[in-house]
Image 1 (cartoon, helix red, strand yellow):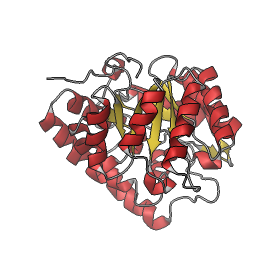
Image 2 (cartoon, rainbow, N blue to C red):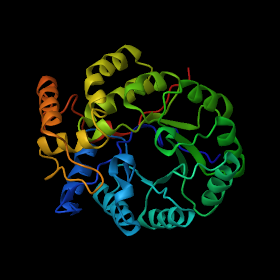
Image 3 (spheres, rainbow, N blue to C red):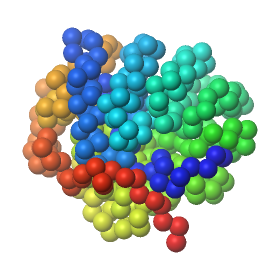
Image 4 (cartoon, one colour):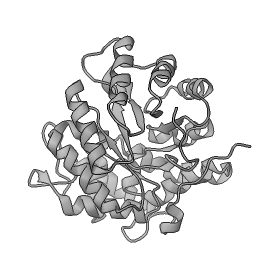
Amino acid sequence: MISLPDNALRGSYPPLVTPFLDQQIDRPSFSRLVDSVIKGGSHGLVVNGTTGEPTTLSTSERTDLVDLAVRSADGRVPVIAATGGQSYSESLALLKGAEQSGAAAAMIVTPYFIRPPVRGLIDYYVSLAAATRLPILIYHIPGRTAVSLPPSAIAEISAKAENLVGVKHASQDLSFVSETLLTLGPDFRVFVGLEELSLPMMALGASGLMNAAGNVDPGRIASLARAALEGRIFEARRLHYELFELNQAIFWDTNPIPIKYMLRKLGLIRSNEHRPPMASATADLEARLDEMLNKLRIRNEGLGIAADTANAKAPSARHD
């Protein structure tokens, strides 16, 4: 595995939503959202992850979003481009586009629907990793892709692809985290992909959070990541419970339906539109989310624990 600076790919990396207006990408809202999560204290951001509804976007739209994110971030934080697609050729094109746009790393989802064998997945990732100079993360989300990649397979990929540096794990399987880190070592980056398991996975040694709620409350989520990485367990636990209902709300309907409604309500995006077959929040869901937002006193001008650009520096992991 290539050596990364200790503070690289650590902390909070929110997967951004893709705002739409009249069914077109709302570029001003997207740039405003990039600025919001950075000013809120996020250590990086992810473009075209599940929260960004990538299956409703064309390849060129996904590449353009990465380019826009890199330009909007303007060097303040690294941008991870999610470059997985339904086919190898699509993934390769997205990977090349991310590299040209200046992304800091690429995250490739396990191919979905076709349910390939593990040996096919190993060859797939090794081949894509060889096609780029970017650090690569595997996006492991068996609940959506219907395929699982065991830690032993990740270790085999790592042995053949030195630029494989981590995995986003979106599953309730905590033993996966322990086994992966025991096999590949503590410098292998494991990102938490399920909001409610942010603290448990980080307590086991995960390097950071890719938390959809980071679109809405970047400050407290970045603070939770920092506290966990720095060994401040009681502070991390307090933030875990403060964020618990918000993290649950992500899944009151299919992600990112609740998130988009909250972002529109907070004035961060102009519309909570989706492209078919996704759909906007129902009136009942809107009322439930309004109540939750009011209770947590989330406001556009200051969400949770405020953080300036100095706080956005990624924390180093403790090794004591």
